[in-house]
Every structure is written in C-alpha cells, then in structure tokens.
Length: 405
Image (cartoon, rainbow, N blue to C red; front, top):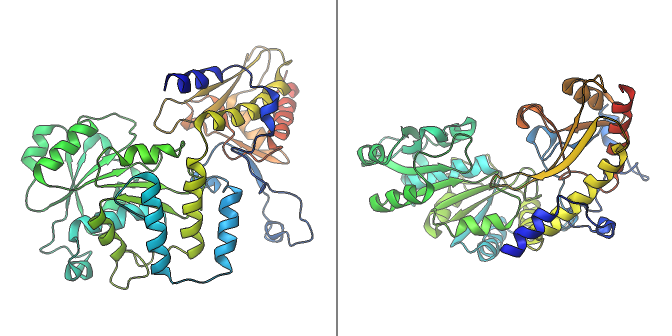
C-alpha cells in the first residue's frame, strides 16, 4: 500500500515519455475519418466533439475499451439463450469481485429498481406480480436525510416509500414490520450522520437488507471488489462510466437470494417490474469483459497513461505568459486524475466561461469539465480522450489562450 501511494504521489511530476505508448487507458477505437463506410453522424447533421470533460451521461459516458467492443461484436453475430448467458456472466462476475452473486442490469438506476423490488418481495411471486401496488408488502426504505439525491426516486418505482433518518436513534424508532430495506449512498456530497459500518450493523441487528449505491465510485475497477467485502447485501454500479463498459449497462452484486429475486424482477421475465429495463446479449458480454479488463489495470498504470496525455497539453501551453497548469488526483471514492489550467487575467483577458464557450464553438469542438462540478475552475479529464486527441486539445487550448494574450 505504501509503495502504491508513493507511485501515485509521484505522478505530479513528469512521466517518462516512454509511457506515452501505453494503451492502458486508451484504445484503438478512436474516432477516425470515415474509411470506406457511411458517416452516420454526418448524415444526421451531427458533429462529433472531443471529450476532455469526463464520462458524463450527457456526453455519452466513457469510451468503451477495445476489448469490450470486440466482445459485443462477437455477441452480435451469435445467439445463446438469455437466461443461460445471464447465469454464466453473473457467476463469472461474482467470482471476479468476491460476492455471492451478481447480475448485469441496464444501468445503476435499473439496479436500484430491481434491487429494491427484490427486498420488498423476496421470492414471493404473488407479491412480485402485485408491484407497484404494495398492499400487504413491506415498502418502507430507510435513508439518511443527507443521502437524499436526484436518483433516489428510482427506489420509489416499485412502490417504496422513503423514510428519512438522521441518527441511530431515528433508525431504532423507525424500523417496523413494513421496513423492506435500508439504503446507503456512496459517496455523498454532505457526509454521513451514520457511518457505513454502523448503518450495516443496525440493519443486521433488525434483520433488514442493506442496499448501497456505489455507481460513481469507479475507477479504479478494484473498488467493486473492495466494496463487495464491506458487507452490504446489495451494491450497484454504473457500467458505462468508470468501468468503461456499455453505456446502457450496470452491475448489481450481493446476496444470493436477493440477486435471484432481482433477476425475477428484470427482463425477460414477464412478471417483472423491470420488464422494460432490457439488457442485450451484447451488453451482458460487454459488461463482463469491461470488468475483467478493468481489474487487470492498476491504478498507477492508468494514472501514468493519463499523465502522459496531460503532459502533451501542458507542453503546448508551457511558454504562454501568465498560464499555469498542474495535475491532481481527486480524493473521492472514484479516484480520477484531472488537469487544472489557470491564467492571470491581467495578462490574458479571458473569463473561464468565455474559454469554455470558445472551446465548444471551435472546429473540432472540445468539451472540458463542467464548471459546476469543478468549483468554477477549468479542469480537463483524459478518461475519454482517444490516442492523439490530447495533442489536438493542446493546440486548441494554446490558440484560444494566445488569442487573448
């Protein structure tokens, strides 16, 4: 652990240019000029952009690894029975991360829907068919007030009611025969009133299943294995962002009986509340390969690839007076590397908002990290950059800054 942290800290300095040929984070699926095929986006009047912002949903998530694309192409030309594939992929994923069971879903939000439904009905088929009507079904989900967020409405899709708590005493007075689940968000913007270990202990005391939304806690992919060991009964992940799998896929891992019930609530089962949340055979296989590939890449190697991309951008603007650029690693559960760019406004007459707008209106267009997510600073991510796009971005950033200096 000490050596690993030392390597990461050392990335603040320049990375040897020999590492720039590493394909750890990049792949050979970078957009290129049309080579004898149709320009589908062009036909639709759409212009692709260079994503130096990160794996945001509005920007289509992360770029799938080449191994994932290959696996999905394989699955697209072959047919197997969906339930058989679901069984085999679930077993392989569970073995990879050390959980009792696992399933591929149509995203983290879908995982929340079918996982909550599973905790409400368990294996009772009559109750499964009844949802979202909850007469006679436990339908209360305990959630910390600080853990309320945009996506918790997914918990209500099967008919659940959210019960807010702020202390252990609140939990003790709130649990009753209608309590179906206790929900935990990782990470949160406002912290925890009840830490994860105490939250799980309380749930175990009352025999209540726990569900953890860890959708945004990757990369690294090893965080999936780490969280699996913490003891939550169910944990969900987004597949098309930090794990670089299919954008419309996700993972649900956890207790064997609850995963079995969650699968009953998902397509292709006709009794399921999640019948419309389909997963294609391409996505089943692609999600598995994304996880397999991600687990083989160390965080240090991933950071080294990204640092090399940032070094090219830094080199492009190094000689511009008043400009500073430095890399840093976020301290959140999802440890991402970013490039900060700043400038002296007395030398370069350009606001941050104007800078973002000029990059966006450039040809090719470039998107950087949204200002509301970076505290108003200009930050770039290399997560979605294809090989060579870092050089293009460096030239564009240089031209924009010099035009105003």
